[in-house]
Length: 282
Image (cartoon, rainbow, N blue to C red; front, side, top):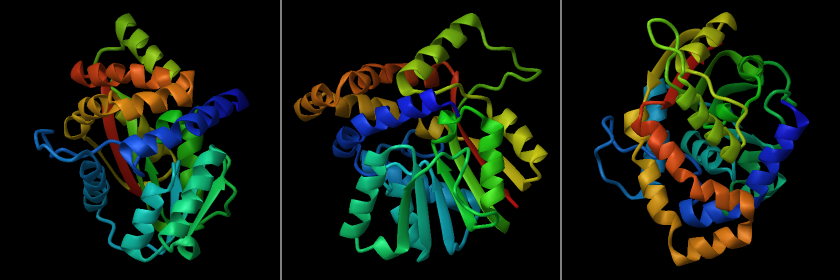
């Protein structure tokens, strides 16, 4: 991952994480609204439900050492450490996020069970075979080299361990599907610009990479319908007085992100943006 992209991602989350914690809470990811996306829920409960549904889908029953790749302010790390009575390590490019995750761990009495580091997911500072569960919740889209990202996740995974990823994708483009149109490419380019993404790929492309890297028992799913309502909920939550004041104080990149929430909403509506899941073992 280029240093300039790393820096943009770091600055984006350094500036915006405090506001999003106020607006969204500790879980900075989609929510789950039923398999068809038609169940109304309180936003934060929907985010917890997404974690639980992903764990149920993956079939993982226990874990001792967990890696949270792209940990944000530690929401998933703390949740998983508590659920499995495990040791969880989270990595992020944002020093602000890592510091806040440590604060939240201390408040929850979980400092002994968690560790948060500023580190690049494409060059992880861990030995081979270090974790029995590697979790990546909506971080793959930030990776400039998707193959290297999965290679690193595979490398640090213990034999027999489980890798579980949920990530933003674009629609399938391999035959018999059609290539992306110029209009779709422009739509994606706007999302990339606003959210500091290098590019996204389709779920079948992730599956092909995982197979080439020797992941076993690979299975995938498209949960776009289940999570798409999240963007309508977030748009409603952002435009209140407290959030607007927070946006102004957070700076231009955060304001752009909030003003561009409709890009993701429309991306789901037109079938361009997909929420892809991949699970596999080493």
